[in-house]
Image (tube, rainbow over all chains, first blue to last red; front, side, top):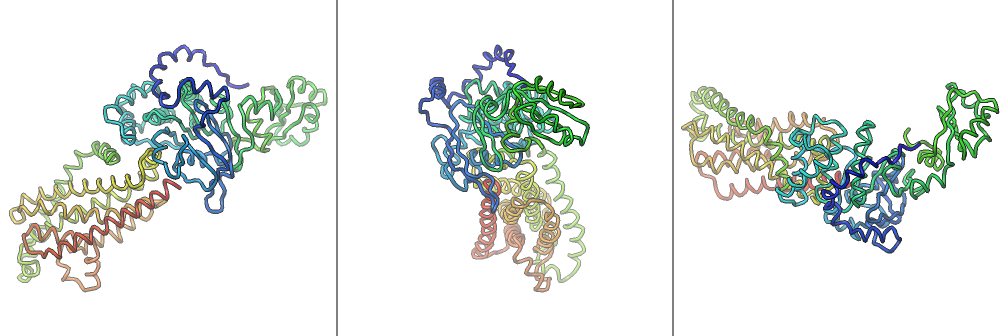
Length: 349
Length: 255
């Protein structure tokens, strides 16, 4: 099962944050824009890429990808490490020149308008780049100064943003002793200091514990509700399911599928999955029991997956065939299964 | 300028301890070298002529202005630059803003000027306590010392910004900075050395700074041409170092 979109509780609180965050999205778009975007009317995309390539020497990191990101959308790049996600993000962030193809942000060309585009972006890098010697607030204020904010304005925004990421009580503490999750929240607050039209997040929750991830997802979900356009990379399928309206699955520098999480699952996986675990090292001899009980099956090192519309029925059939699994689990299909189907590999290795 | 603010904000955490050592160190140094070593040197009949007709303290103290600036310029350029590029990733954070590599380099030049300038000013303040070297020329010597510190610092910064590891830094200290320091004409006239070693002094940014400091402080004559020559030589170091630092930083941050 998916972890679920249980944001009922947070929705009621959102009104308080609504006012605070209005300005975050204010320069990006109006509600009208968002409506027309979803209605399919021609709205200029925030990001347009076609045939986009990135090459380092002989190594092709990104191999001709096409995508558009519309205002107000939460758009994800899902793929394993080395798929080309971060290279794509750096090109979008105008810190890495393209090796070929077209890339436009806000209708501008990164090659000639890098600083002007970066002025309108918020970036949460994969590795934290906060200054450990400074306080949380100083980090935000100094970063705001890089965007030519006045000191007073930078301080005002820093205060609001620390409130938003629930770190007001840590404003005057140094960054160094903070936990990984807190540092990540500081980084997100920092990325919002210039009221960006587009927020780029490169693996925002990698390395965080589950609780910290949920806090972060909640904050990002609120930003999304305020109409901030999010573009994120992840190798966690649950993260992609939670946050992304639309995503592309990347593998070896190419886009192998795209759509909403639901669409991708419907298209590339069955409704349910039966996971069978057998005694270690005996998958090969047990695979006979799994074949034919569902639409298809996959043998992984530690378990056998059976794709079927009804997992319980498949399990009953497998047992009738004589299977004696040590454990059996029936679950809904996830993006992990989509990825496995498309590439023959798992996302997190 | 904005990036310079960042360095200042970090510095604010340590400046008190820093100011104290910046003042205390030259004081101890002047006492030891100027009075202690100086007493021996001055006993030698021929040394006054070699030193330009002044007691040893008047010879070595202006050198101290330049060596201090040089050391500060070098120290602020190796590890801190590498740290901002690689470990702390502050430069990477800046690259995601409208800032460009040129802004980072310009801020670093300003920062080196600030640090070498304040360090030299502290030495000048300590020197003012010694009657033999007290003069208004000290004020003019501060920018001269500063320039030689930045002149060494910028090429080192260009090196530091491009390195994947800092293994080479202690070697640079031992085999580049220390020889430049010892043979830069701060402690004895270069004419005392065989020509082969003397060359180290002439190419060292330190010697050019020392010459100017000594001339301003003692009020001895230096031709305008010589002064322009020294300043130009040092400025070339600053400019070439800055150009390379910008290019190398761009190659890494915008790969």
